[in-house]
Length: 246
Length: 246
DNA sequence: CGACAATTTGATCTGTCTCAACTATGGTGG
DNA sequence: CCACCATAGTTGAGACAGATCAAATTGTCG
Image 1 (tube, chains in turn purple, orange, blue, brown):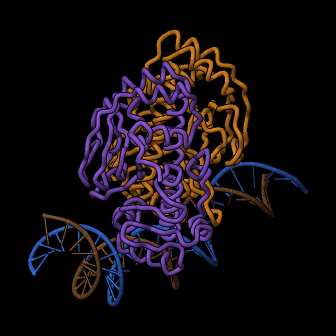
Image 2: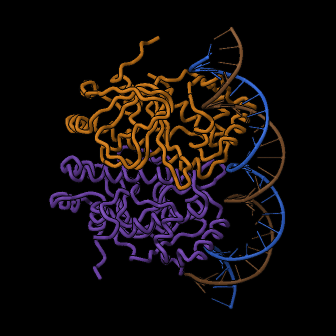
Image 3: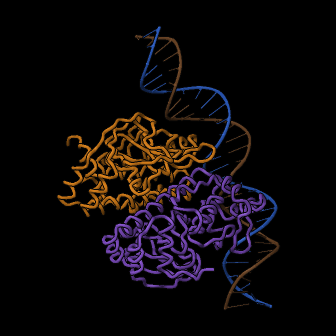
């Protein structure tokens, strides 16, 4: 059982799940100055429209990006876990076009854009890796457009579960069968464009089909093949180097 | 009435709609070697899963990114016009996670990744501008997730029209009231997650409300304020430097 | 224990889909 | 020049997935 990774190690685990780093890249990343902060459940970390001068690295907990459309309905755009940098794009887009919120109590580390820019200029490996991180986020948004646009309720929810499972597993945050996904049904609904009532029924359907089982915040994958099948899930869009932790 | 811009000029118009370039940036962009090609209507330019070594610049016509989900249903992810580089992300994600297709006869220019990389390394202004282009694409995908996830049919369609209008106008491809948008109703449905029948009814509703009028492929904005209102449209997510052409 | 959040269930309603037929439109070849 | 055909658009009727509303149940935590 490995010790809990340090914040810098979290970042390196995340980056190495998608890109190859050499010793000097890793050394450079370890010099990044981090400003740690704890944030309570359901608190906004960044609000849409704000000007941003730091990007944040998640150390623990679950975070989501979201927008609010006319009528106050919320659409969750993505989920993020320890090691992710959910607003890295603020490096080149200074006004936030969406909000970032803590879904659980979270620990984040703020990193100034300036420090990241200096490191990227000095270190081509880090430069390429972070751009790749940004582009993979973009790829995930594309998949989500297809998910909410053209899949039915059971496919949508199964797909989100598959994605979270694969991504968390690559980050060392899930076992071969279990993941801790502390989302409410209403949050799953906001991510999939469904009402919370219908999410409830659809989750029941997934359990009835013995694809998953749920014990509090812990979800178990009972039949990974069948779950991917019903989700129409293909992990290619995540552009991971490997699907299991190193 | 200005002459039709050259391919390199198209690219510079597009980039200057989102970023500031200096003389050396513009000069550098003009040296990019372009391999021109004409592509027929409804032909794929890049197919999902392919390995890509060139990015393409659209010279004329309309192009879309799309995915096909289980059951063969298509989801259009984005529309692209003259000056756009719709698969710039292949620079760092070599296997395409979606397809790119010509919706009209199009002229494209292929640019080798190597040439773009050399230019970006030599020219920080171009580097930042192209990354910004990538991140704005990403922002547009986020808005589309919210559009198909949480808006109703009339809002979705009005929103897509608003976006195309503003983006085409910034590229000098639309007048103050008219845009040439040669999309079939079925393509609009694939972009908004609606059936073509319902698109038809909803477009009729938009015309009945005197928000738009349609004459073949030419759409006129009759009441821009009211159209934005019904679309819940705010152009901030496009991160444009200005909403009208230079 | 009490209070509040989250989940579960039932009943009803509605937006959108599907299927099918019909009309315009434009292109092609005889 | 017109008959023909393919494509896109339009309209109607019925079905269904998922929304909404309402209420009961089950956590969960101070």
